Image (cartoon, rainbow, N blue to C red; front, side, top):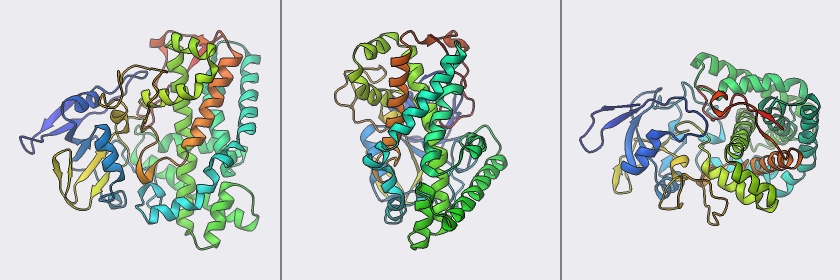
Length: 405
């Protein structure tokens, strides 16, 4: 649903009443703006004022990589947004601009190289196998959110970070509150404060007793003067929350997409070598979040697609609409495992390209490979319309995913 508030005849402000969507339905407002008004003004449910909304592939790439659009300038401004709160702490890498962003990111980059992450694969595979052993032993029907998509990403990022198993259920609770628009701002801020306190203590413990994990790397960076304690805590919080929650939901979205497209699933069973390319297409196709994330502020007058955005104005851009731009992707609303050219933006673009993209791919590959190999008759255990979807979610995903085999 949208309503219109007049600012100018050429660019009226459209209120974006972001609602919960079922399954992998694409937001009709996003679809309409991409087709009819690719650069527009919008107002979201929280915050103040309005913002520009940029939807087309090349325009999104421009806004997210041009240094005249600042993330740091967002801090302290009550800009229009979906959530009642800002997810990162103010010191987080998610709010930084280069060269500060480069400095912050460098402190953890070595933990996310291809070589470093491949060392996680055997342990992640063992964890997935153990979880599926338990599910198979229990017998069908089973909820994949409970047995696989929830615990596996939480275990993988927690092992990398150094969060012990006893603390992981609480970590999951904090993250669920933080990455939702369904809770009050106070509840969200309390969860963020509690997580920050936890990581402050964890990093202090690593200073007393160093360990070979990401918390240990961050603690060492504070002793070397590369990071302040506040910066290190902010990075730990953002990585822990984002990695566990995003992979949980998006890997479940992938399985749901396959289970509701049986022809595509059958093809992966017959052609397992196609899986990496299929994962890229699923990443492109799946609308993995609601609305938009962190905005940017124009630091000077900039023209985008012939539209003048003035210094100080807020700009939201959408990787989801970029991934459905027909100028770049043929038949963008269809899943096509033969899509040879697939430069999707699901992990972002520019300086804020997702540091954990390779980790997310690795976990998705393990999950899909394991399910396909072990359960040749895997299928939904309930009608599609009975599956529950998370409400008020920032990162979209099913609440339950009942399957049988």
